[in-house]
Amino acid sequence: MEDTTELAPAVRSILSAARSRAAEGRSGDVAVDPRDLRAAFDAAEADGRVPIIAEVKPTSPTTDGTREDDPVELAESMVAGGAAALSVLTEPEHFGGSVDTLERVREAVDVPVLRKDFIVAESQLDAVESDVVLLIARFVGDDLPDLLAAARDRGFQVLVEVHDREELATALDAGATLVGVNNRDLAELVVDLGTFESVAPHVPDDVTLIAESGIASTEDARRMRAAGADALLVGSAIMAGDVEANTRELTRAESGDGADIASDETDENGETDESSGDGESGTRDTRHTTDTPT
Ligand SMILES: O=C(O)c1ccccc1NCC(=O)[C@H](O)[C@H](O)COP(=O)(O)O
Image (cartoon, rainbow, N blue to C red):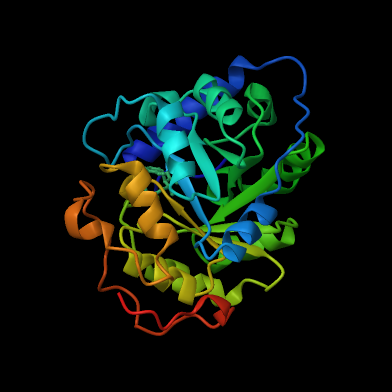
């Protein structure tokens, strides 16, 4: 079991709740016929859209209040705004999510759907079908290879989330081919886009790389793409206000006609550290670098 002493209290509480749910158990393994996430990213690129995984995130430990709209309507609006894929929180106690919500969303849309939860035990994998599941390297520790295999056996594509180079090495050793770098530090819950920029150059080109958390503007989106992100996972900035318009603006961040969503939508988290990083782009892959002005 992981040492949780350095985690933020909210994150320790999330983990404790996850372990309780894991203990409830379920019978029977799910068998998923997944929608291809990489193909969805390629289709967005071919269409001139930045590949965005838009997250249905009703609330979170760093969000004030709860968005009560029908999650299916929110999801459909995200797809209408050009999202290549969706992420749906299924964690009930801290994020207002549910497996029922994910089932309804996946039925309503035809893009790949990531199940965003805090999986620490194999039994949790059988709670619901999704196209992609998340494994957080920090939380699963030495169980990563076994959980990765268990998820793949069920048909899931697996996004392994890391926060630093050490976790990246662990993920690659375990055979991860889909890696997310979380800009949110789970010890302090502070967001720093420099995190992605420092880890991305060390990710092999044949790994699909996703920048997660704290992307609050079209400028942030371009910054993460310039640092080598194949796709961006965005929750709070899309959930704040008109989700279709917010999604569209981010997907158009490289086509020069996207207004800056941060200019008229205030992210109540207000945690993105724009001053972080040293201003140099990562060199992993410059395909995404753009000269398009804001
Ligand atoms: O978002 C939180 O407040 C949070 C707190 C503690 C653990 C995890 C948390 N978020 C999970 C996520 O992965 C994000 O929802 C996702 O990366 C989107 O981030 P953002 O665009 O910053 O909402």
